[in-house]
Amino acid sequence: MTESLGTTAMLTASPYPSTVPPSRRRWRAPRATGKLLTRHVGLLAVLGLALGLRFWTITWWGAAPQSDELNFLHAAQALQDGTYPAEEKRLPLYPLLIAGGWTLVPGADPAVIARGLSVVSSLVALALTYALALRLGASRLAALLAPLFLLAFRPFLMSSIRGYADMLALALFLGALVSLLHLPHRGTVTATACL
Image 1 (cartoon, rainbow, N blue to C red):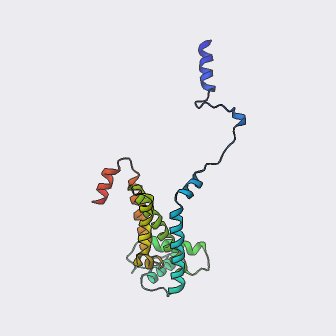
Image 2: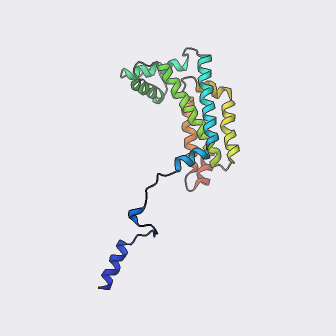
Image 3: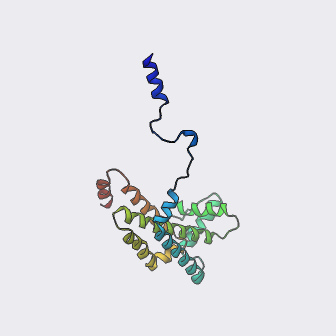
């Protein structure tokens, strides 16, 4: 009899003791978002500066699509028609993303969609540069300087306002590096990846 009472008491007892009865506990929303924003307010300022600089450069520079950008737009148009150009030697990921954006926003200029995709990819690359610096052990100030230096690099700015696949490739590469550093045996994996 005492054995059955003991197991029943063990099943009904909470593993987390509390002084407040369950009927009086209030649910609270997690404060992770607030902490995230306050801890990385410098990064948000850098991303805001980068976005403003990109929009200013696009409106100031405002050139028509050319060279590779036209090739990507032509391939995106062909993908929407259900084919892929035989003369195109690149993989269709970037034109597929442009065609997807074109489908989501009907009637939009495909050059604007390609440039918007490039701008978003460059902002992701800046945020991942900051995350990579933090993950490698840099202080917050040094980690904030990393995307600022990248932001001041003129070829990075010019590639980010054109409809090239370079920014997407850079964002994917930096994302892979950051995720590699989150692995449990990151020393050997990082050394192997660097080689």
